[in-house]
Length: 295
Image 1 (cartoon, rainbow, N blue to C red):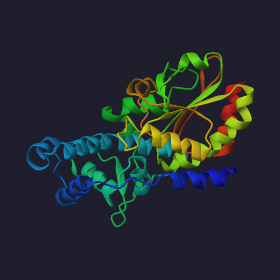
Image 2: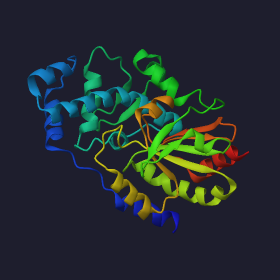
Image 3: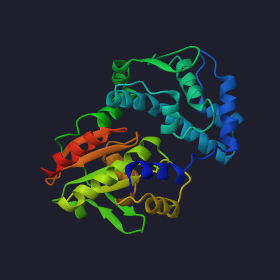
Image 4: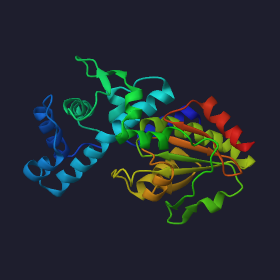
């Protein structure tokens, strides 16, 4: 199966999940009530506005996303040399209500406690400038950025222990003395849809030489609505040849709290990380990283 045919198949297998009525309700409320200079107080929303368990769960997710967006913006810019669009942000964080990414950025801009980290086009809402230095200097974000975008290459890969789709263990012990890639992704992640067929082709070429790919699926930690059967069907239909595992919080934390997908760590036979990539990469870069791990 060709790379492009497999990429198209992956895109057809999964369609973006639809937003729930509760999520639409919350986003529309925020659109109407976010005012410049007035912080959004989540506890007030909990106590006075959104009281159902489903609504509060969505509020928790949006609150966590709010703090991840600046990290994603810097990582995306560092890896692609581009500024992410509102669509890029929406896709990365599964923000499926129209205007949802924009309203989260409006909350950031409206809160006087949050330093001005971004500039946006007043008509389109698109980000036009990133104050990378200010984001990295902010204590709320700097530690996470240090863990996720720097300092990994040349260091020993963290230990991991996860369950496979079949329930069997997938752990570091299985790749001792073997070059491998641990590939963090989630279902319906647009950059992952483009990356997976390339990795599958590289596994076909370099697997016989001892290289192994472990794909850690983040649906569970991101609370996405996919089960193991859906994921297994996807892998089969897409013809992926990876060792498939379910990412757990312990492994996520061990690798710096991965929050941007895909993130890839290429590890050589000594157990040392030789390359790390965040976000989509071309075949040439990925193949060079595989070859470096095999040295």
